[in-house]
Image 1 (cartoon, rainbow, N blue to C red):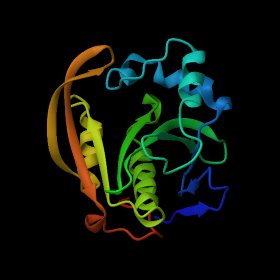
Image 2 (cartoon, one colour):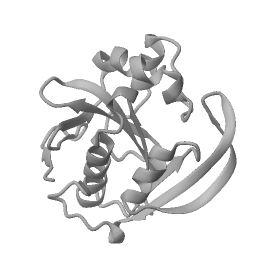
Image 3 (spheres, rainbow, N blue to C red):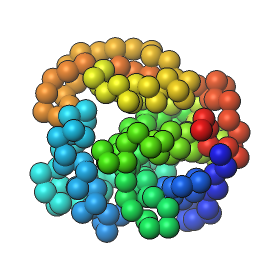
Length: 196
């Protein structure tokens, strides 16, 4: 699977895969973001639960305008084909610049799950982080009940590196699993997105 990264101003990145386009979310995406992030099946596994479109707009406003700003989240939308339908999003948390560490969070609207879109989008972002930005480690914090995310982390070659209790997701206190992937274990070049 090939991916193309378009050259845009330093503030933005656009990644094209076979079926998807990933770009920074903007205020025009708030309604679509709200439509799936407000669903109980989605927010069950997450700390963000928008009650109104204005919450989704505030969420987008609260993300970084530029990539690779320590301590910030940069939110990419996952858009399907030429129709530019927002089907999900990937958050990139630039945790530690010195260690080259980032955290990923990914969400897909339920009607687009099980079709390989996450398996296409997440590796494309992973390749970009390792190849273009020189990051050395990616972590993912997964609710243990979210079997699809756990399977995706394993498929990408991530290993479970930790566990903690008392994370709040979907309004509930639960546990969290930490998966990690180091750049030297990522077998895909900058020209391929990852497992297909």
